[in-house]
Length: 119
Ligand SMILES: [Zn+2]
Image (cartoon, rainbow, N blue to C red; front, side, top):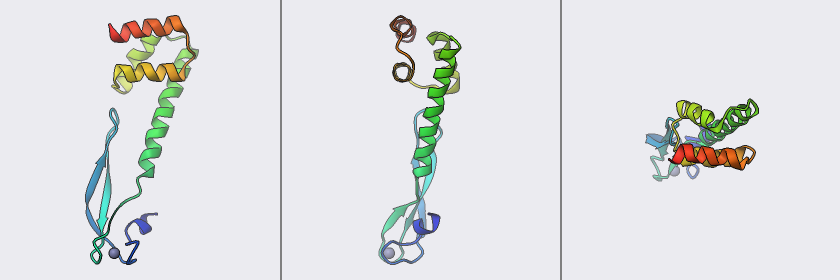
């Protein structure tokens, strides 16, 4: 993977490192992905960033698992929301949407969470 990313796909010669692109996700720290430029044809490419996409996916999977476990332990949405704010300061609507998607839809509980988050 790394070798193919630093070799020009056209000329097959070693490319020159040429700064970074920074990717970040709100609430997560960013990553710097190297950019390379071919000294011959000026083709420019980026290092593989699928690891970053995978990291984001597994991070949000983990958050959803935390929601589920806390719900199984009968922690209130208010309690979960307070705790999640400590782990990752996400937007309140994001937290609310994630709850709706990942936990059982108890209308009364969701209503009280909504009041907690938006009032
Ligand atoms: Zn080239």
